[in-house]
Image 1 (cartoon, rainbow, N blue to C red):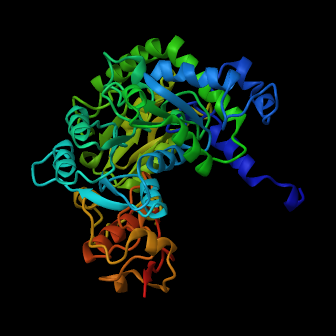
Image 2 (cartoon, rainbow, N blue to C red; image 1 turned 180 degrees about the horizontal axis):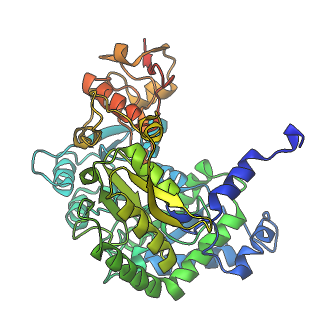
Length: 504
């Protein structure tokens, strides 16, 4: 075959979908969640703004009707379809709520999109950093009270592992101060369908602006997103649908995808018709899965968490991250993420018993140190033969942490850094866009220097260091531990001899 006739990306995507079990985004399970009548004709929906189709950026007719139905399903006063992801939805929400140069109250642990939005709009971050024993919501209320001049408060709920933050006291305090409440509910677009079984939605609690990533938990195409204005925010005039539409045109492409928009319409309809039954079925499958967990595997779950999000602490198994990744790979089960001590899985709402059985086999394989999955002639994964010494001791299968130990489970101190800011030497906007001199230096030589770009472990995309922040020794040690465990850290160059860009 001629080298230029190859399609490496197409080939790899087909291979990723072949005979594997998906427990990660997108929730359409590589298209398996779409019915044949839609899946087989999906690409015929790719069109442009003509009289018959309407215009997604200027909704009317069928486009507006689809968005209005979504508003009713999710309990919003106004809803827009965003086909370029919740990144666009969040940037639009920030620009709608926050005049240039205003103050924004926010936790440290937010998606990197908010960092970029703050830079673009020259916002001044007011950090919420909980005191010892203080909950996030308590710290946010404290900051809202102390900073009545702030235009908005930003909250992420649920967070990546499914934990939710109660919003009632935050929203009441914000109302008293005239502060708008923006919520990144990217991982909670399914909550509305079963309020008695799942956590309450941000809209039902009174949030003003809410962004949902439909593709994360609903049968929609990546990166379909819903952007909502709350009912009371519309009726009271706190948020203008016209201004939101203007800001959306700033950040969304002038050629939004009708295919993705149509999948948002389908996902909303599916949620109305099938969502409740699917949630009940999935809860039953999860209950059966967790009844028989290995004793060395601990499910991390709080009463207020999303019961459909599966987060497990595998540190009790004695496995390294590389071993865990290999066991999942050999079992043909693809998780959302495996970090130094946790596994996060996102089962689609229509996950089948067969898929859950494959996951159960992998989880049980983690419990037997030195043993892995083998695949028989029929391609079925079973707990089987020993790793060879070469497999276990190769660079891909065994790692050491940044403190020189083969036990890479001590991750709590790294996670804690995501909740604390570092001293800012330069405003984030100036660091990203200003006329400043930058230089690449070895990681260890960056101590005390201001970062010229974000340093972001990915996933989930929460910055360990914002542009303009001082790079401290403990953050360097955290980066070293993450790199040693083969975790991607954006902003770190030359992984074999790590370096970062700093401001001169």
